Image (cartoon, rainbow, N blue to C red; front, side, top):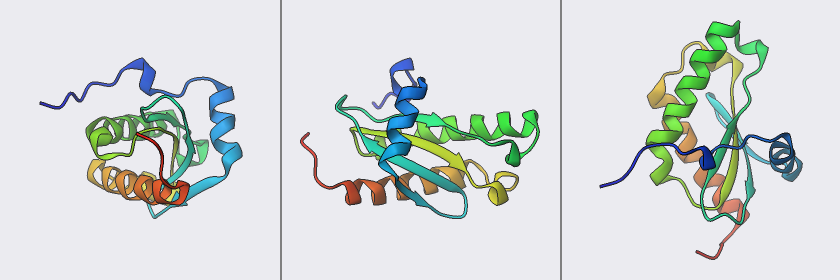
Length: 122
């Protein structure tokens, strides 16, 4: 049985870690989501969120963050290991995108980025 809980170790928290991901400039996007990725040596995929004020007021931003955390939680077993991801919702889709949309985008974009990074040791 797969475990779907999120541990604190699966989150990117420090500005240094965010800067490493942004510095790699490896990104992919679609109508719902922009994902930045970088390889890590931890053997697990971590994520961080960056939700701009352009998405809306605090209530709207918090709702989008909850959806993105839930999308990662439910899709974590479908994502490649060994990546640091920064998830940024697209402003146009933030109001109308649902959990299914974010999950689909997250899995597709992460797989695309993983192929661009190339093969890694397991």
